[in-house]
Image 1 (cartoon, rainbow, N blue to C red):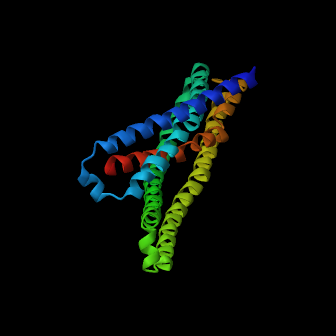
Image 2 (image 1 turned 90 degrees about the horizontal axis):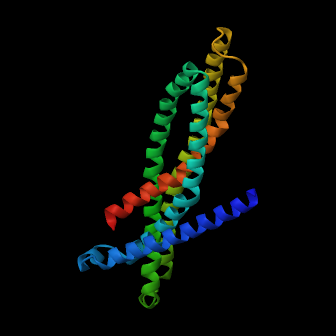
Length: 243
């Protein structure tokens, strides 16, 4: 039964993803066709193609598998908190006090992820611009023996894209372990408070096991969809500003 539902889910997610890509590319292309000539004078073809292809592909992944995973984890944690509230409201309120702290930390890193994701996509677009210009005007490049210069120019664009990607990678690398560290700290505080409730007779030992649903690796799993989500946020602002 699980294999069947997994098959249906995989097919539906992939179908939805491809349909989203097709619809978004059609909408972006239609929007481009409605722009005045001055719009195309001010922007290079390679940049527009990058937005039409790369940015839409990133959005496809987020709007299917990543959103599905995020919703799954949120529903699991919400259910666990609901059960905890029924069993012991004091412990649940203590847990909820800790939530805004981790959310604030996630929002701060989210801003950085969105910012650097936008920068990465911009640099990749610049590399696409260089390659598109050279290949479209390859006769002129050959005529003036500018091959080495154009290779160097493309390498420079790739180098900037690589440097921007490394910055984004550093933020993502720090984000995961730091969230996990705070999650472990929150778990320790929850167990300490729960232990006090047990000693004072307001809670039995068995319900403490429900904290298992709020363990750090559950919180850690929530962080994985965030990178692509913030990449889409950056891509959306990028498209809004320039397309």
